[in-house]
Image 1 (cartoon, rainbow, N blue to C red):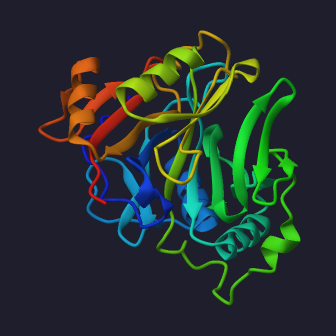
Image 2: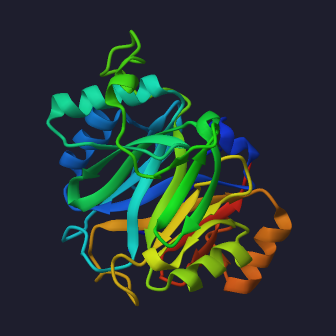
Length: 305
């Protein structure tokens, strides 16, 4: 596993400012650095940052969002715990429109979805690492409930909606700005949520809720998934699923995939409780290092927003 000792600065200002927990960078192991850099920089729109001794740090406006750790000897391994996808949240629909243009020009497939509370595009980075680019659209969201037929989103007009409707690409492209598509991502982009494969959804959800302070948004045991919020306006800050198989464990050493997720917890008492509950150790006087029940590595620091 990549050794990670450095953490990124505070996230950008957004609806995350209402959350008790926010994200720093997501660290991923990769096999071949050059194709990964082409994807994350040329297609996604991140920029390489100078002065990082541990990994290759990519971000916007001097804030790292993704850290690449080269040296993996195989792509991601199916049927294991780890990253389903990391999600970069964009400040406006126009940024998603620019991304759609870049992905199309590069010949990289991107699938769209309308979740009511967000509009999203999904793609796969080299080594099988999942990515979501999303725009929060809370002005359209009312509430959510789970039924026997599946989760239902109630929009602000009271209409029941599917959480996975097709993205209205024409509507998104209507917002395409004059800014050149190849320009870097807007400064307001940030890591807004992560979606993890775990072996036991309930056990993992208990950990993230009771130890770290996330809150249940939608429990979906029939579908092997739990969706959690960070206590703020936006409901979808952490997703857990068992789609890699119940009892899934970490991949073999040397596999590409998740190395660590940086979490910033505002409440000092919660940080102390997390350290005590998990027996966490600080890394060289820096972040607390924890493993969730599935073995996913977390680096916990204070939220400086």
